Length: 384
Image (cartoon, rainbow, N blue to C red):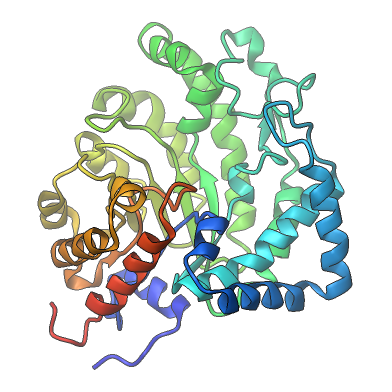
């Protein structure tokens, strides 16, 4: 019998394929409203009280006022937030993460700052006349003349945000989100320009990739010095059926650049991409990640994946987002039990949705997923 583990111990053991007390729940993004609606009022008040305690009452009131000011005109034309407002909102989010994880039974907390996924912070900007256009500008970089539009953020600013987040780490496994570089590249070029350039001018794609990956490599070198337990590296590079490019193009044009980032990740790390990764998975795994996420529902044969790769890497995810958004708690429980049966053996599985807990997930289905994990995910009850 394995003694009850802390969330951090559980995640780190699963990352290494070591014995654990139960399958971890490791979700990189949870919609706060859905999480709150999934529990009773007493638990909601507990989250608020915990956050008040972490930030200090006076500080929270000040920060909430700043956040209200920043979000008062949210929409497509939302102006960029000031530095003070940005820090206030991230401070609230960082303090809220442990409370949400405790509430849901999630074993990790996630900081998105290095990935630039906050609207108020981007690793680089492409259009200084419209400051809300960061790397996800969908097509600003069309020719080499556009390369100088990529002005990168100060890495010291990233480190400062990370340190603020880690002040609230508690007993959870803390991770920092980052990109390896392909996703920012195709967003910045626009998918059509990116795809055509891979055929007609792959060197141009390589030049964009080089700038992006050099910044992320330097960023990871500094972030990995901090007290994060693992890194979560994202790059959406595949459709439901196939990768966006051939294995040859991936190996020759893109992989040499993302490898530079991977080499600077000195913590255990998770790799995220939706879609079917099997055609390039051997090359992908050569970068040294410990985990593949999120196993998009229906994109890969789970039994084949577990058989061929389940001894090498931990697998995370596959609870169908459509099921969580559209169906019943009973349906969710049945799916969790099925997926645990396929992916759970040998300690190398962590439960999560097949992407993230979106605003469309039914609160009762989120509750059902967590309760099903508690019911079926313990390793000392003869399930495996």
